[in-house]
Image (tube, rainbow, N blue to C red; front, side, top):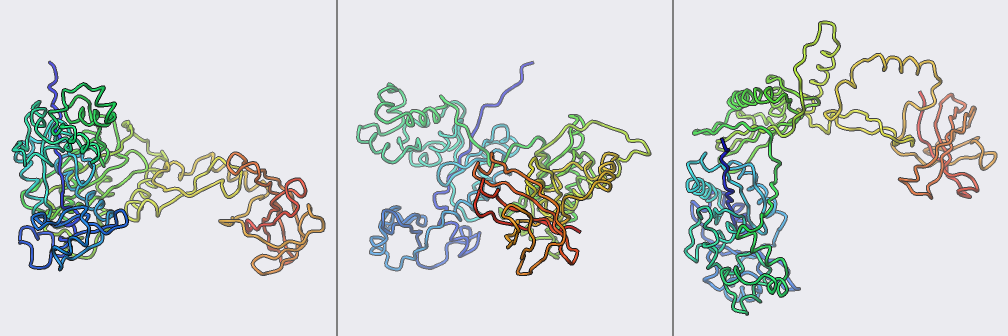
Length: 538
């Protein structure tokens, strides 16, 4: 039987007053649109354009008073003397748009930023969960209005068509939900600027009488490309569906997802724990069926007021035990606990919980014998997972060997969550190395300085061992000396001009032992080599 395929459906959301809505939410609260704008002088967002103060954004409805974008501030003040001016903060606007994108994942996991103040949602196969495209669109606009945003949205087969109709469709009596395969007719009467063209290109087309999209849709392509460039044809093809437009979702598509919607929002941490156990219970059989184990998993809690709480956990090894997966999230919940009854600021509650498995590894079923040491290793790995979940992966680190012969580069710290737990077990090879180290003489210091420190040295000959040196303003007299041990530079990293090191193991008159080196071969590399302290022996 042939599998039924869904035609792509894209929902475009535009926020024409994003900058002013952000400021209004800060001034009057998130529900300011539902309660009505309080009395007060109007405000605009200004910025410097071509060495002049111009209006970047303004409140809704100010066009009828003669206020427009790109207008000089002096002209606007002449119209409205009491106009309040606020400096444009593009970083804050982008952060708010990213937050809105995360919130829109309640409708689909495929959410991408569009050019300007807008979002694209790929709702292919998702609309039936909300009763259809019309109820989905109505629910989205109602929730955005309750959060204080003015939004314009449309649904079509292509991202370009949905964007054009969301921005320009209302004035041309175009339906905001365009049925499948009918977007070319819906775009026909829209202006050419609806193709997301540069302002100059749109102005040149209008001068030639090519006012709407229908006037250029069937024109010969070669003259259009020669006159206006390939970008015009590419945008036209994207809108009409002749060429696929690639959307880049902000979050990677999860391998497995389990979610729960609540008619009555939940607030208490205990309710969240119980529901989390159910979501994990839905995920585990799917992992078993595929022979996989979880490596990274994210729990997203969608608040009624629009905020999204995201909790992500990782496991050092592939994990499929439901109780252990839940325990990792419990550690994250405990880390967010603020002492309140709910555990954190839940606002008016969470109406959606989604558990996403974002990274997996093959995990075959295995059975250990009673004397196997794997249980100990597994316990250490589980401990590292829990500590990393509670304190953060960057806080629990282990030493990782690097492929380098420069002492300070031989090892580096890396998150323990990324290291195999087997490295922390006791193996015969590790014991053999430990026994060998007890027989061989110690040639490396117990304490290696993070950076070699410059010292003053007195030597009998320029290329000989030191007889006296001063480190951190304290003089030392050399009693015994071993060396040199020559370590060449890594010219493929540092360049061919980097100097060679001659290391010496030094013991002073008080019995303290040091590891220092001369940087640069005398005469062959430099006429004035420098000395550095690099480590201390026990």
